[in-house]
Amino acid sequence: MSSFTLPTTLHPAWLLGGLFLVALSIRGLVALIRRHRISARRRAYRDYLRTDVWKRLRREALDRDGRRCRLCNAAGNLQVHHRYYPEVLGTETTDALTTLCRRCHEEVAHRAEP
Image (tube, rainbow, N blue to C red; front, side, top):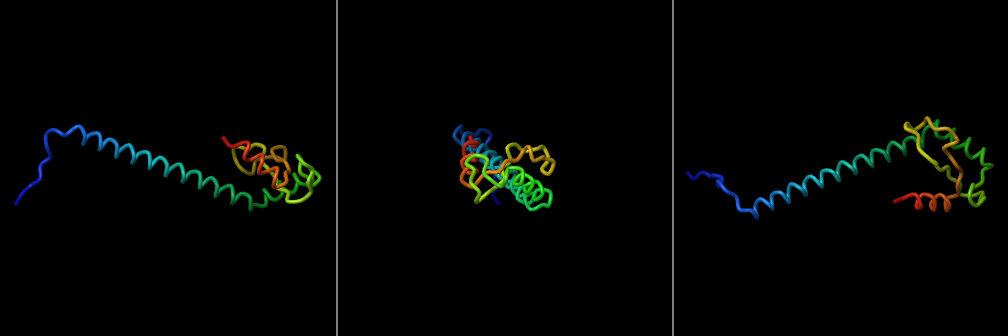
């Protein structure tokens, strides 16, 4: 019966290869955690948009803005945009919201991305 023994010294290429694999594993794990956090945040936000609190705030913002886009004055395809987000969703006031048409909302959202 043969037994396996580890060599007392390792070839430098093996060490580099092992370190490379560890780095890839850590990088992959960090990316996975980041994706999970982002998707959990998106899910929470999507769920919030279905609440009565959001529906009331949205209606108040639309009424305050005369049901018109604040940028181009369009009356159709209106969306309510968060100008900034509160620490806790549902605690914002209509001051944090503005009415935009879909086209202007997309332009504002893309402009805000890094």
